[in-house]
Length: 553
Image (tube, rainbow, N blue to C red; front, side, top):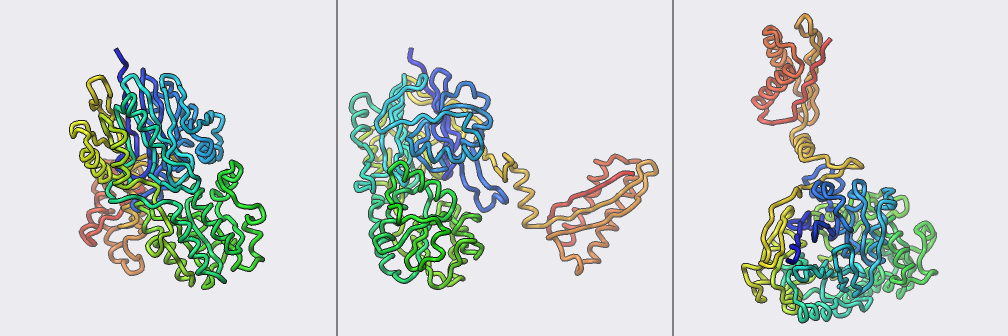
């Protein structure tokens, strides 16, 4: 009897980011991506959001490896955190491994992994996993779809993909191989990118952005041009450089990740910029600004990025003014709109002319739209279908497309983070859930937790009231205090009467508790919190954080 095959979704279903799934055969696990997500506006103080790794850590000895489909951080950025707990090889194209290893190397964890490079259309086995790596076009070069040839038939995972018939590097999404698999052995289960499933039509070719960029450089003769895009978007960097050089400019990179990725792509022959046209940022300060193009990080408005520092006039390399043009060659990731808007506003305040995707077609999506998704479905003809990679509305839209294209409605399954399904001879059956909540990273501290975020929310909205009092434990008397300190609740000089009333109320309740013989510090802290909280709420109709500090002598 053939072994059953399980798929467990740990992230990426219901959000943009945190992409991570686990394929399981004979109690062995192959991870499919291990990505991070950037924090949303209400995640105060959080730097990164990771998948919940608790289930994987419990099964650590069963992990055979991790296939990274392409070089974006929402697919590999969490590896530097998981490798602190576990050790396993990472599998992907040479470029993808180069991008993924940057964070891992920075964390000093390269000794905990091996990098196994695979090539286009290569088929290799890793333990019980028979994997075929199929080229797909995306906004970063050398991405793969992955066909898992399992005891229960072929599972095809598209990775992030689009149908670009004129890609910058000529590397097409290999529909022929996918069609051959469908024709010969059939696709039992398709897992497909849903990011643009609610958008009609076809995505634009990446090559079309090149003409727009060229026209923008022609229109900005005599001005310095600063462009911003993803550091991993090698094809966009190539087109920016081509346009700049064709108009007599030299190119300089700004931002550590941009510098590293440009160096890597050039070393691999994937990025072609002449040596005499690519300068270090410190070497362009004495050149005519009109002969310079700077390619910068920060297209998503990241607070500490090179572009954000320029917008706040804090860059040590570049001071912007009314003779500068900034081209944001990107589109905000959902959740980043406010950050991008803030950067644009800062640039405009400095007198900069800003061009973004709302003004000119300076960006092309890397994800397939509805007609491309339908084309793939018509070629692959899967028996079962699970939409992946997207917010819930994207998953539902993609499920609708699958039904339109002939997948039986009962064989279209919408899953969410934490869902686990089994694929057997009888089909797909849900098999419970595993932990899949957000893991928050603040600085170098892993998982600050939802409780900490709730506290930060309260502090940001309502402020804090600290009540400090010292008691004599033996005598049961107040020695000093109560002293009331407040931040963000009321302006102290204008609220002396209110603060005095708070002191008197807390003191009265403490005296009552002490007279009853209650000398336990935890109990007295509860008395202080309750008394102060009630008065604050009654008088101001607000709910700041109440922090009681009761000390004993």
